[in-house]
Length: 206
Image (cartoon, rainbow, N blue to C red; front, side):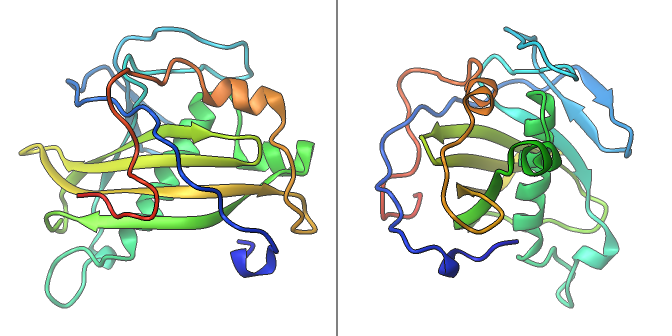
């Protein structure tokens, strides 16, 4: 992963964007790697090599099961794993919208560099817990993309963690570049819900 320290530019100020409310989870479907993705009824779809699945409120859901290796001496999931699960969630979201990181890099010389990441831990997860990673596109600008996340334990619907990541798009030489328009269009398919917003600029979520 390209480091932000190599990029000579300031991070933009955040602006209010829409963030949906919780919804009932249903309609599971199996993926090739054994991870189950779940979606509410589809609202629209862009032409793409794979199905473009979009929740009514913009959330994409990926189901995971906690492995023994992801727990620590205290018997709970180590905090570092949540950022890994965020990555899994946004990778799945991109594939559901019709493209992948690999396609961006090889076809369009566009790399998504992590510029900011934030996690608020609400409750611990344990070995064998089945979790849902909920991912949404919160903001797309000319050169950056912001994702927001929730991780919920399925058995009791407990919110375990929430957070966000900001990504700058660069070329292979670490030069910031414009996001190709077709990716912006695919990422912004029916993801808004009036009346809510992302985390305020320069302030952690409450």
